[in-house]
Image (cartoon, rainbow, N blue to C red; front, side, top):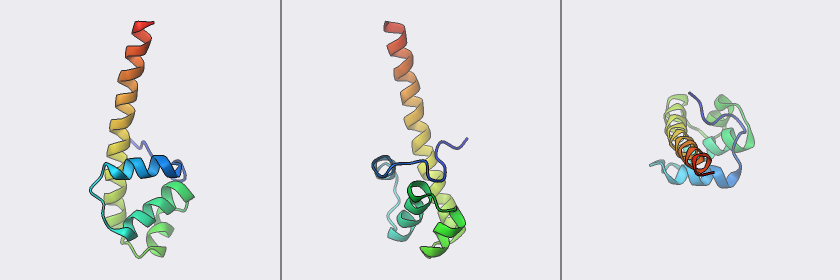
Length: 85
């Protein structure tokens, strides 16, 4: 399941998600930002940043995995808050 998508992230959330990955390449970071924050298509973001589509996809999946974990934590927290009230 996709937890992140084109243009769906603000700069701050993008940086927090990115900080939980092992992504170090400035070009891949820029391509991800162009796709997730700016809203460019993944193929366009990859091309203008000189990143192969396969490397972009690998990095995107890593970011999505982190976003999935964040959402699962939020669900657990929300369930706990609801059960207390």
